[in-house]
Length: 196
Image (cartoon, rainbow, N blue to C red):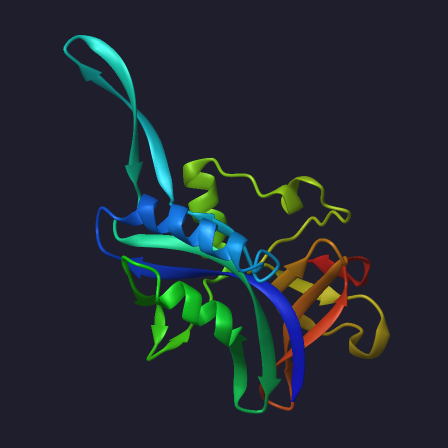
């Protein structure tokens, strides 16, 4: 089993109408308890639109997902023969879960399930949110998650697969490749693959 620490976005369910209060309360709790390294960002996804009210234009913000708040947390990614699993810090889980207005994490039972990268990117595109990390990318790529690529060098040369994850800071890409009839994640550098 391999374990790696990653930052992933999670959704928490809140009472409808309490999203902003939950965000504010959580930010204060996380700051006070010194957990800003674990829970790094909290976001209420809102869409900006313009309405005509009594003949005048007015800018309004509408929640895209009423009753939900997004948060970026550090999680341990556990990869084994059974699949990939994510474990969040138990103290941070407890703090989030026991914040007024929070009914729980989106996931199975009490285990939070991280959002897929493409889901997060779609939400960010809709709300016009730019992550700092994305703006200061050290590595560029002409492919993205979901694209099919071919490995150019190394132990998997000429193998083809689908991009599952991209790490712009490290310049690494995780590709799902068919090895002995099983889809297996393989990590290579951006320069070692080309889009098909």
